[in-house]
Image (cartoon, rainbow, N blue to C red; front, side, top):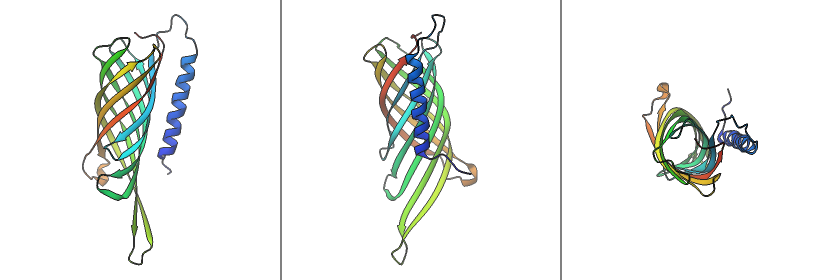
Length: 195
């Protein structure tokens, strides 16, 4: 069975963001109460992996919202330059804004999802020939963190957030729980009217 690699997940994330941007450009009837935002930008994982994310958020009220996020990153583990990892993740969760204002809105969030990690190890055998070993690990991802959204106009702003993600691997190949620090920064575009 083929798995989705990070390039395909990033393409899916771009399609979701473009669809949300197109939805923002379409006027809603006066009776519609749908509001939220789309965001995308740079993601760093534990200081050594770099990538991007796409996120869609729907407001449930003045302080609560739900979000979905697709992200991908590529890089090495700290201290191991022989293995290159490609991670693709999908997270859904809830976000709480504790001081919502038109311009600055700090928040905290929790989420759950899946993380697919593919590692490629490049070594050299005894005869000097390159050897490429590939392995994959699928994780249950539990993520919590916080950040701040700063709107520069009523519709466009910036979001910075810092999350801690715990990856629990498939128990048939148990390697222990992994923890990833995930800072990110990106552009936010609001749609609808804020509750």
